[in-house]
Every structure is written in structure tokens, then in C-alpha cells.
Length: 222
Image 1: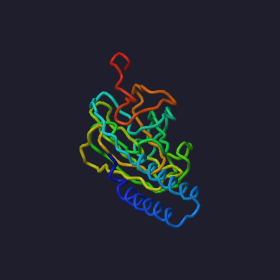
Image 2 (image 1 turned 60 degrees about the horizontal axis):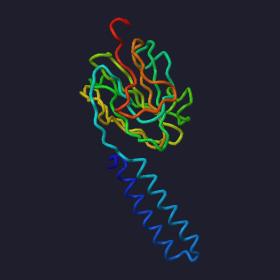
Image 3 (image 1 turned 180 degrees about the vertical axis):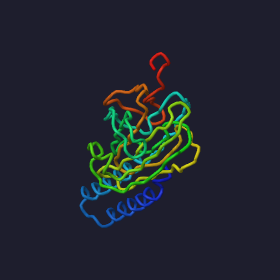
């Protein structure tokens, strides 16, 4: 199954590839060149299909856990000063998505959307330290039952040129449901309270709506 955000580009690519294959068959005399063009066209179609794939996942909702909002690799775990919404210190967990990852963004926790804002910006590579502040991005804050307010940012990368964000202020959202999409390479930052117990490590691969990235601390740890 494919994500709805890819419907137009999949159809366009499908017809373009079909035309390219037919034209190559009738107008390219050299067999090796004809086959090369046709194979390259099919490869492009396969790449587009895999990018917009939408795997269905069984989600075990848990108020005590924050789930990874996207598929990818953990590239940052650090304490930061968050200046857009909280104006205080938070623990940031950043997940980088390569073009081969599923690019659906999912709600990391159930709760109520308190803040949702789009920021136009640059297209630095997604792992650049300034990408969280200078790149095209969206910021969403969810008020959760156990963690209080948590924040996540969809950040466009060097290849990305469009971020889709479904979160609307006042909306009740469910952990693991689609919250948006980032096209062609990107990163998502999750900012959590300082007492959150982080359960992932740097360079760990995570799966959206499946991998727990943080839990509430035990009472004897507070």
C-alpha cells in the first residue's frame, strides 16, 4: 500500500515510464541502448514506489512510552535550550531518514495538539547542527497524560522541498497515527522533559510507531 501523499507523483511517474519504454522500443535502434533506457525507467518507478510505501503496523498504545515518530537512525541525544515554545531545557532525540526509509511521520504519543506551526527556511543537509533552526520545518506540541507537553519537529533536508503536517491545534490525536509526511530525505527532532528515561542509543535504527525512544522515570528515580 502507498501513502496518499504519493498518489499524484506515482501516477505521473507510471505514465511517464510507460511512454519512455514505448518510445525506446520504437525509436531507439541500438538494442543495448533501448534496453538501458527501459531498465532505467523501471528503476525510477521502483524507487518512487518504495519511497511512498505505507506499511501498516500494529500499534500498542502506551501513555508511559514515547514512540519513534519516523523510521531512521538516531543521530542526536542531547540536552538543548528550546526557544520556540518552552523557553527552557529539554532532552532532544533526533532521527535521520535516508531516502530509502519510510517517510511517514507518526504521532509519538496520544494527547491534545497545543501548538502547530510551519516555518519556511533553508535546505541544509538534515544532519547539519543548524538544520533544526534554519531549515524548512514544522513544530508540533502535544499535551500528553504522563509527559506533559512534548514537542516534535519535521525538518526538511537537502533533497526535501515539501513538508506535510496534519496536526491541528485542539485536535485529539492517537499514538502511531499519521501526522504528516516529508518528501525525499529529512529529519525529525523530539524534545522531551529532562526527567524522561531515554531508551535508545546513538546510531540505533528505529521504526516509526514501534520503537520506544523514552519512558516515564520510575518513582524511585525522581
